[in-house]
Length: 325
Ligand SMILES: Nc1nc2c(ncn2[C@@H]2O[C@H](COP(=O)(O)OP(=O)(O)OP(=O)(O)O)[C@@H](O)[C@H]2O)c(=O)[nH]1
Ligand SMILES: [Mg+2]
Image (tube, rainbow, N blue to C red; front, side):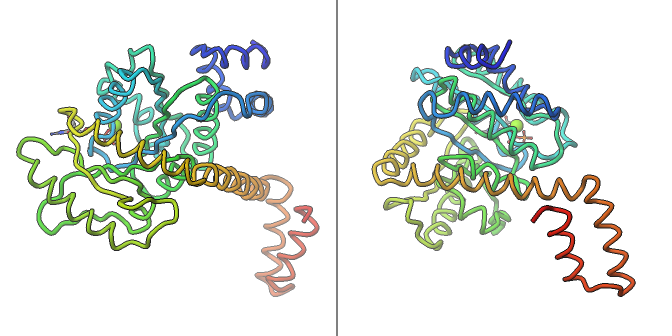
């Protein structure tokens, strides 16, 4: 399949072409990279914008269960749903989604859903680019909603938030004074906090946890991209499919307001800029790791160690003479 063919098929919502295109963007081979760039350029601006929803939560909080029931609900509304993942930890077997496709049994068989497991790459920068490009491909293939899942470990939330229109934080009911170690920076990224497992014995705890987080959200600095009442916390039960309609209602309310007030476009533009700058940074770092820059750097480092030159002067030489800056 050549690039033009692949483009045409993706635009016709052909799932096999989409899957092959994602394999292409995942490849590390230089010729594949060139083809992937060509394909993405050919698709640029085609199709409508999907709603990209980032979803983060610690292991076991219920992400897969939530995606299964929330995704099914969306497809029942006639929406086409794609599910992608950013999973930087190579330790997990084959990526989070593949590992528990059993928990997304219905969704994975649904003709209006497309689930793509995380690639087995350990480098977050590589996963980030691959996912961002997969998002663009799914968008071109006409998906209405793209769910991007990540396990809440360190940096990956930022990566997902920077490619999402909405960022959801899934939390578990917390017992006692344990107000989970959610970092302030992550709280500040959240548009909606969902306290999951609000069912059975856990319901009362979930509601208390939700109230605690609602209080914590109110203490954060007001963001220009939020209407009154956002960000907000609410309870759901992914397992019992409870609160999902309400959650979807809140998401669309927020998104509609942002569209009407220019924040949607502004955010997409800022994200495009962010990823451009990030790629340049990553590209420069990659250059440093390759020959001949790596050897020159090591040689200059020795000179600095021996006091033959100053750190600043050596850095300047490195940048000007060996990195074309
Ligand atoms: N009671 C209750 N249990 C739930 C709910 N959602 C998920 N669970 C259970 O919590 C466990 C973990 O759910 P998963 O959906 O696999 O969680 P996850 O966040 O995808 O976990 P990882 O993929 O390991 O990061 C399973 O045993 C689920 O059945 C819920 O709404 N209520
Ligand atoms: Mg999971």
